[in-house]
Picture (tube, rainbow over the protein chains, first blue to last red):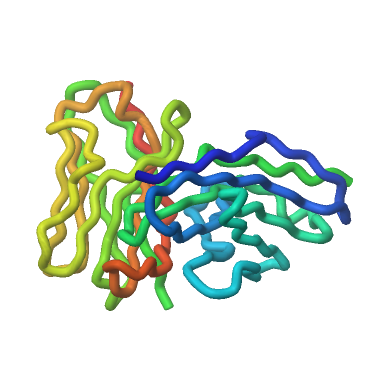
Length: 112
Length: 116
């Protein structure tokens, strides 16, 4: 079985500041990990995913995440926040099948 | 190309009525998924179709929920005798292959269901 914990349901950053959204997972098998973004009244869009290989994964819009097995983490970062990054972000895990187990989401607010 | 489409975008119904939600996956995608997004439960997996295999129904919350996929393409999620707790956004996703490798799932915009 798999589960995901996203610490912080709401995160607020200033424009230009570092974005850090936390995700910790639990999995009984090697995990595959995903970050999705949801803009208001839209579906989910994949930002990046980790399957195997390089543990630092780069995604769209300047986001990246690092898979740390020892810490069971897959935190999402972006060096410099932009107003357009304001959205809800979901971390998800699957154990090799295709059912995604999602975290509860983190609402990112970007302030001037 | 065209993404995953869902209809209707919004549906308001009365408690006890049946509703049908439709999903058109990306052309050529063999796997199709339904998820539910609600305030109390977050994003939950409901059901998964892969080609001609029997669907994985392990996420359906009750026997009032059912889904079918005709001709390996369009899918319909049916909720019978709707209850207020069924109010949620129902998201459909599709992926190219499906199987052990975790393909990217592409999501539709969802159907917002409100049960009065």
